[in-house]
Image 1 (spheres, rainbow, N blue to C red):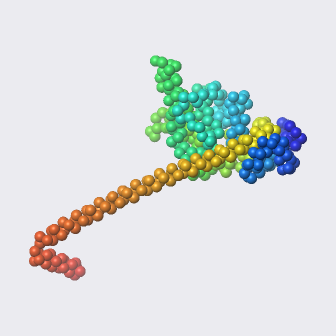
Image 2: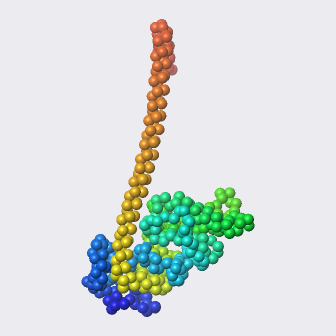
Image 3: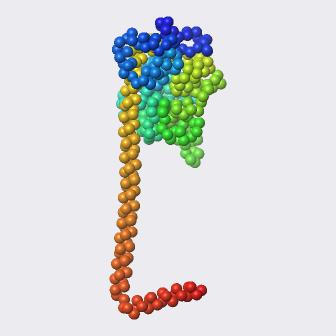
Length: 372
């Protein structure tokens, strides 16, 4: 690494950060100009993304971990370190130490979705026999529970088909293993913000009568909201738990937060050093931001479509309600008209003397009431 991009290799450092250390913006931009195609792409970035990149080069902020290339570098399960980090994250979420036995291919899974919202989407087989469907999303879907149910049902049925084919006549439903659906969202839907200070939402299935108290069914959903976490947790110390350390890593670019995280959990220093290596590959770094910009545009487009569909659905519901109300009003009018016609017909058949007698009786009744 050049002098301008040096980082601190000392494993014991707690007062320095493993971030690039260009002296000035001019030095950082000169570094990008050394690769003509990288410089051209840099100039195409919006000013805010240019500034974020320069701040990273000056050591004023980290890179977002949810950038696809960064996330893959840290957690890719085909890399030994990536697999170990993924195991550590899953162990912290599930509350017990686990080992990943196998990354299960997505081929054949009907619910597989190719979307720019997703940073990671893998299915892993754990050493306790269970499965974990792990998703990392930039933006949470507006219908997370329905989607989670469909997705995890698909995985359970896939497991059912595999087990039945393997065990044959020996198959029983007890052979099916639990499936965890772990969904980490950078930006979570509004429903998840209704409970103050809560950033992890676990959904299990139990009977209201108390039977099978130790059995929560074949699946469990765990939603983790990084935006809520970042709002609720401001300080990481040596007394913090490992899960909060990982969520801090996933949710912050602040040098102060990074400093506190590394001071309390030195193991993260190595990861930040790996991320800093991106600065030595200016073309890859800027291409990553260009891709991120493209993803943001696609996300915005998709969100606009979803919002338009939701608005259309609400409008249709309101129109149906109005139609129902109109039909009710029409029915009431028809009934009133019928009653009026009957009254007219009834009145026609009365003699003038009968009508006069009814009128006299009514007047006398009113007088008696007033007298009382």
